[in-house]
Length: 337
Ligand code: ATP
Image (cartoon, rainbow, N blue to C red):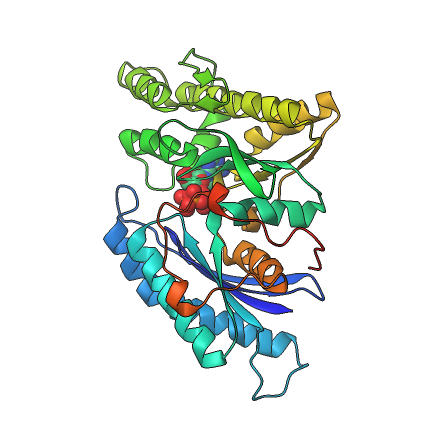
């Protein structure tokens, strides 16, 4: 089974080919980088329109060169998988249109993938875990997922913004360019602790109070290094606390990390320490699989296609609010890829 994945939910136009036999993934990505401010949906969609055909062409060319096991007139892949949501509507529509027309041209099945479940499944696939809890710490989302009764259930989640978007709001206030997360990580290295709000309510958490307090502290003259350090300590401790509670509630001893904020070394350190203390296994995929990427779409697309979980073009509408717990998990029994 060889699958082309296409991703473009917000900022990253990406295409990838996953070959299940060799377990190899080739990813070609072209990020949208706003000149100022955050992600502008219209500009991001224009970027997708420009970049998606190009990254698909490069990924398919790679597949033709890498695997010489098919006749020239056979399709280079067995299915086309695309991010159906959640994400920005104007971007999702472009990705879906490209995937549909390609599936039709190649005469192969189409697979509609939930982007957040893909963030989880790439960690589970790479770690070889059976049934982990997943912390998705991405730009537009922050939630804990656990498998129960045929679906990934949302065990806890942010009550306002996604974790990356919250960090990016602070750095926009400071005047730094997007994305802000890596700049916070750099400046945090020289910072000292100042107290900020810490909001965990059961399994849910909130970032709006801490972000307002961080902006106010910066405006009051607290050194930006101290604010960055303290933001990381508070926000990542909140995520670690809820991850530990999720492990405890589900009785699972496997934790995977997903999403672009997972590239942060301090977050990974806190999660690894917490897991080590309770004897659980922790896996953070390599950075190319943490930030938005089509590799995770191709890998989950292959699992779904192997399970016969494909979609007719007529039924393949995008869903900007596609929640992970809406997805029937069809691929885990008798898993073959
Ligand atoms: P989603 O996957 O929910 O649709 P998304 O498309 O915005 O969200 P991702 O690619 O998963 O995003 O993550 C992007 C986010 O990751 C940005 O908010 C960025 O600031 C943050 N980020 C990237 N690197 C780091 C880092 N080293 N530390 C903290 N945050 C980071």
